[in-house]
Amino acid sequence: MTLPETSRVRLGDLSMCRILNGMWQVSGGHGQIDPARAVAAMFSYHDAGFTTWDLADHYGPAEDFIGTFRREFAARRGAERLGDIQAFTKWVPHLGAMPRPIVEAAIDVSRRRMGVERLDLLQFHWWDYHDRRYLDALKHLADLREAGKIRHLALTNFDTERLGVIADTGIRIVSNQVQYSLVDRRPAAGMAAFCEAHGVALLTYGTLLGGLLSEAWLGRREPGHADLVTMSQQKYKQMIDTWGGWTLFQELLAALKRIADKHGTSIANIGTRAILDRPAVAGVVIGARLGLSEHLADTARVFDLALDGEDRAALDPILARARDLMAVIGDCGDEYR
Ligand SMILES: NC(=O)c1ccc[n+]([C@@H]2O[C@H](COP(=O)([O-])OP(=O)(O)OC[C@H]3O[C@@H](n4cnc5c(N)ncnc54)[C@H](OP(=O)(O)O)[C@@H]3O)[C@@H](O)[C@H]2O)c1
Image (tube, rainbow, N blue to C red; front, side, top):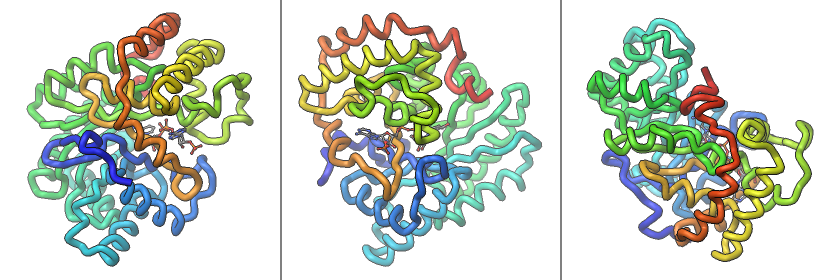
């Protein structure tokens, strides 16, 4: 399977796949991951054209899996082809002082675990905006980029206001990773326009609501906690509850199913395509339970899919009945603060 040209987009000087393989799912709470099977599965993703990985320092063994995958890849296919792989990690520090040695030590740990001289993309998260030391950390991260340890500097879960604060410092940021789905449409409120104006791309997660946005949940009674078998499902069930509840969600799934049937594709692909088409969105991160489940053939079809005005019009009346999550939760990432 090879993906069409339209599956790729540029992020800075990198070419990335517009569907990224999300590695939170290897960190526990998503079924027992076997390391050898997981790394073998990474070859399948790569060979199918899904060459871009999203991970974090705190996603269990994810950075080590990248290290192992790269070593095996170099041994089998030659080190000169390692540039075909893109691995985007995150740094999620505890609150505290952010002097250069602390920042640099964290980056060095990720470089060592992943087996790279230079991190392709480092996405920085911060827990509390009242503590403005995130600006110290970003200054040092920008210096480490100049020193060659980071290729591109990025953010995750930053709100629009702080994107503005950071832009004012002159620190160059290529992307912000935020939750964005047909259910959680907060980025459309202000963030996307800001990003377009300032050349910041959005990478999105939660787009498939942990898999709840799929045929598997169409027509099913409301799940209780015991029915939700992954942490991801639990997280997004709460989001659905805040948004409008299970009954409205079933209406959304039914409408998506009609659209999916019309296009001969899946509910997941309609949900993914709807977000890929939104302004400022460069890529959608889809969680991968490596070695346990995969949806590669289905996901590949998202690149041949074009939604039309009739499709969007069919969803609008349902989405209009949901709560305004900007009002209920706040801007992107406020749920973590
Ligand atoms: N920056 C942040 O704060 C943050 C937060 C959360 C997540 N993330 C990133 O985003 C990634 C995505 O995680 P997520 O929790 O948001 O999950 P998600 O991508 O919304 O859902 C992933 C699940 O969707 C199901 N799925 C995937 N493709 C499908 C298809 N074509 N048809 C039907 N079902 C399909 C799979 O379920 P099954 O495995 O059960 O088949 C998969 O495990 C994470 O791995 C991480 O990299 C970032």
